[in-house]
Length: 125
Image (cartoon, rainbow, N blue to C red):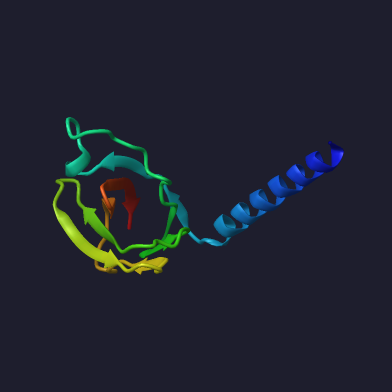
């Protein structure tokens, strides 16, 4: 019993340390994202399931850093306060950084499109 408890506690420490070390290495300020469902899974279109995870994204200057490695490409958009899309790009699978144009300045809504999910958060450049 004590051996099992020791192994469980060791596993918890290793997992927690690994997770913390990955997130401590990322520069900048963390962007708090909210999850929305895309049009195909909106209200009245069947079950809405929570995503497996919400991406962890950091912003430093005009560079976005993603803690997770995406298995598929994802779409990125920035919209101004009026809802106009001022920037869009694709993040290829396996990519963890995205450089935003330095000509952008102000507060924007960052949209990350992953499958049927849309993650949104505010950024200031």
